Amino acid sequence: VHSVGVLGGWHPLALRPELRRCLYDREQRRAMGHFYRFQVPIKPERDLVADDAAAVEQCLRRWSGPAWQDTPEFTEAARYLRAAMQIPGVAHCALEFYRWAFRSLFRGDGRRFANAMRDPSPVPVLQLHGRVDGCVLPRTAQASTAWAGRGSTLRELPGVGHYPHLEAPELTTDLLLEWLNR
Image 1 (tube, helix red, strand yellow):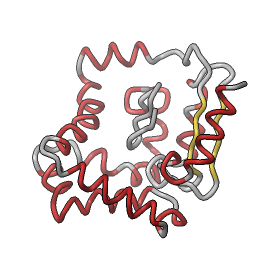
Image 2: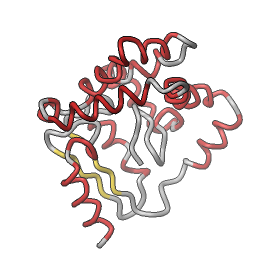
Image 3: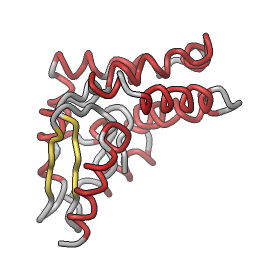
Image 4: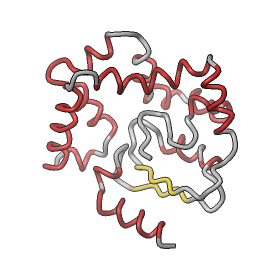
């Protein structure tokens, strides 16, 4: 599972009262400012698709490691992601993820989800996290490890940002295969 923004796969931070202290971290709050901006209707969708979806590439640059940004792979990924965001309905659906995570804090479905996520994962989790992630800061990822379950591993990847599978695909594949073969 790849985390989008500050919302992780097995324990959405926004729904975990135990982890909300990360939200008081000034740097993490700044890094996740998009989460709050995405809550208003209509404008975020328009902003995402404006200027050939330039905001998508801006996020990609802000959250990724600097070395990847100078590669042909970055240029190709940015082109594909910008094109995908312009498909009708995609911007809205992408933002609904963030909106549900916030709104659900106040609704029954969110409380049920939070209760289901209260305990650590029953199976070990491999968490790959870029050391220069500009979206979910490494210390936020470290704070979440208690809910990853017994036998879990957090691997921080030097020089890598928010997108390990894109920025370091060979390393990501090697670590995943190593994990699965243990």
